[in-house]
Image (cartoon, rainbow, N blue to C red):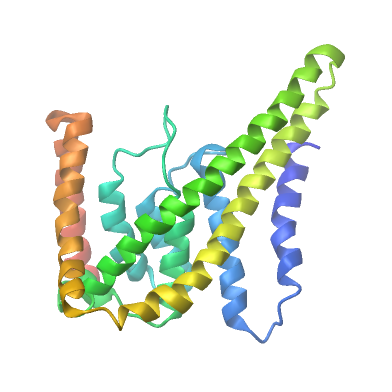
Length: 263
């Protein structure tokens, strides 16, 4: 099985699942499409092109744009990107599963009808605790998703051991089959994890926000305000002041332009 055939199989599997869903239910259709988006972005982490669209900020904005509200993705993806500035899948094993958690959380927020554009523009403080509640969910669900990544990696290790047989019989097609199997497993892991998380967030996590005590709401309101400092400190500690200041200046300028001319 060559790469093109593997990719065709990878794309056809979720479509086959969607055929079971009634066309009159747009919510379920959106959930399954979001699962497909997460599966593709999980492949971008390390398995395919590594375009960095799988980083938190692009994931959030892409998911929000996919659902019709890119500002919701920006409001949640930006603070998560800041705190994960040093957790890059380049030459190291990244921790957590921010892709599935962000796709699920941003998708659940947009499907629930929440408007986070006001919180992003700092025009009101009413939605900032909700943003903190969602950022907290990203951390918790990302840790849970990392367990699924570990299971996937163990399966990949077992399958790659089969590749040693190619040294004896010279069947190179076996390597292509193993590679296609690993790609499909990564996609399926992202798809299934995202669908499960999205249902939990939409039905349990978001409704729970309305029942939080005022003390917890105050702490959640501070969380998005403290994360930029934590992210900047993490960036400087990892790459040094000289390498970090151009990114900080350009990021500040872009943030100002977005809040000044877009919001």
